[in-house]
Image (cartoon, rainbow, N blue to C red; front, side, top):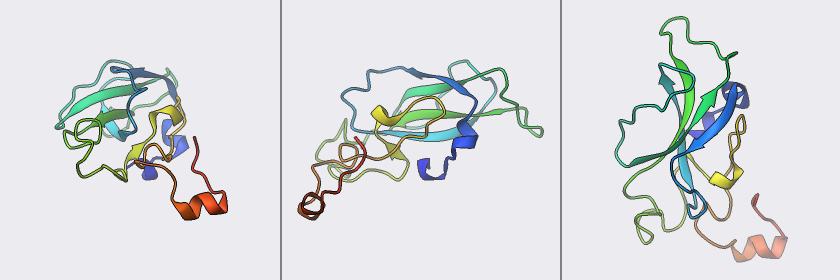
Length: 133
């Protein structure tokens, strides 16, 4: 889950590769996957589709036990908002979802009003509280 990803786990990222235009996506799911290389496109074994992935720099060290690298992969499932706008995530978003506009190499990203599926609540507006944009 994105909330469990820490900045030190992604500190060796040098680039995020997007396989799709993310400008129309309210959110993407992100996970840290164990992958055999620092830089190549990872195999994808989930339902749905891979949206992007991170590349690691030469200082990234593989796991001593498995020889794999922990890299971020960004993805969506068939029931996510982009494919089913009135479905399960018409409002709200999965725990591992972040607004792709908040992502950069080494930056875990965050939820925003956009990723949560709508405008701020009346109480948030009255208190002047906004989520990151």
